[in-house]
Image (cartoon, rainbow, N blue to C red; front, top):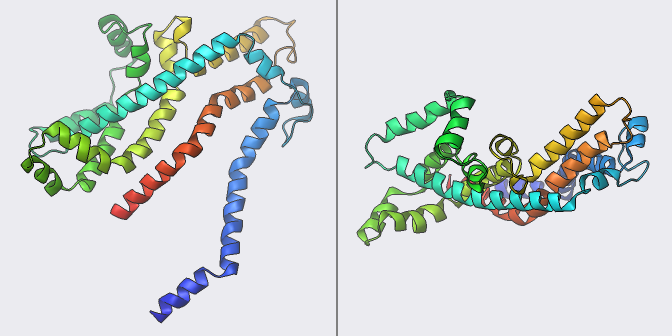
Amino acid sequence: MSSLSVKSKKDSSPVYTTISYAVVTIIALVCVLPFIVLLAGAFSSESSVLKDGYWFWPREFSLEAFQFIFRFPEDVLSAYKVSILITIIGTVVSLFISTMAAYVLCRKELRYRNALSFFLFFTTLFSGGLAPYYIWLSRYLHLSNTYYVLILGPMFNVMYILILRSFIKGSVPEPLIESGKIDGAGDLRIFLQLVIPLSKPALASIGVFTALAYWNDWWTAMMFTSKDQLIPLQYLLYKMLSAINLSAAMSEHVSSVSTPKETFKLAMTVIATGPIVMVFPFVQRYFVSGITIGAVKG
């Protein structure tokens, strides 16, 4: 006991605390500095960036990149609405169905559950290819130019299902499920009231990655949508950047300063990551607490 008390006093000493905070501060600065350069470049003029490069503050303050993006504000607002809608709905539905599939796969009474798990894992190694995927969604399921393709297309990630299966198998006690059945609860009630609450650590972690995947997805919209009201934010910014590159390549009279190409990329990143950065502080405590609970249970 004396050695433990001496060790705890040593760990809580002012010198140790100062060194710990200094190391954490240095690591935080290393992580934050690229974002500072990003913001400074986004609010700089194209000419100053091409002439002097990037710096930690704008050498010549300008909003030309943001003005170029918001030339048609209704298109940007519509793209924001589509991205927020598919991110929220897609994340909730994906987590619910993935957790349900993971719970079913870890039940011993399910016949051929190992074969089904192998079938899912097999799809991570080999796929049917892009052409069958496109034909299946567009011609047979008729999902083109609908919100359904933006939600259902990137919904399933087999690795997340397998991770959830392993988590549920190790964190949800079998006697707890059996006691629920003895009390008269059905499979759906057990899943909703026992499995999901005990799976919050894994759901918090996978939910963040799923939401980011939906928010950053532009490929699905490019492949399956042609209506302007279905264009998400990432695809809209991609189209803008492609238009700038195409106009600069085809016209010799378009100078590199007339269209903010470099600063546009930085402003595009700010606009795309802004909502995620603002929402993350409110979600962080659930994410961190979920990881902590999982570590304690493990």
